[in-house]
Image (cartoon, rainbow, N blue to C red; front, side, top):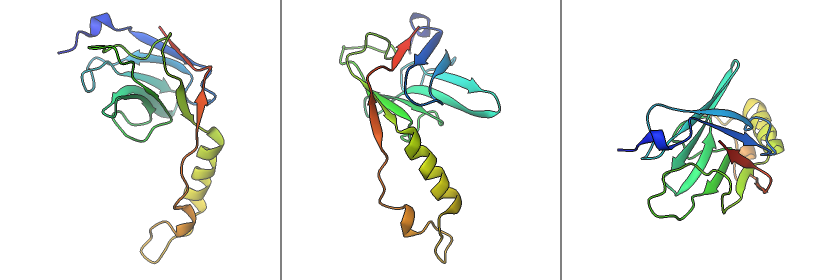
Length: 140
């Protein structure tokens, strides 16, 4: 079991370079994968989650526990550490390029489909672009 009382109730993400990520995240009542997890609620929009992922990275994502993410950072290698990646954190965050996300949304809406209704080849093979966000900070 995880003692969540040792973890901050709230975190603030700032200077990510991605307008959807920055904001106040509140700790959820239950841990995820033995670590605290946080949610930022947004007016009439999908919530965002900060959580530890099994690849030994912290993710910011629209879905709690998902491998799909808007931002990620390596965990600190301290033994037994369950704390979120607060400053000072030894590794830089990698954040999905906001322009790439806009392009992907356009493709998803207007992309061609094959006979079976699956996305056509136009949208395949493009890898996501993540930028190092050296200025991004997670603070309590």
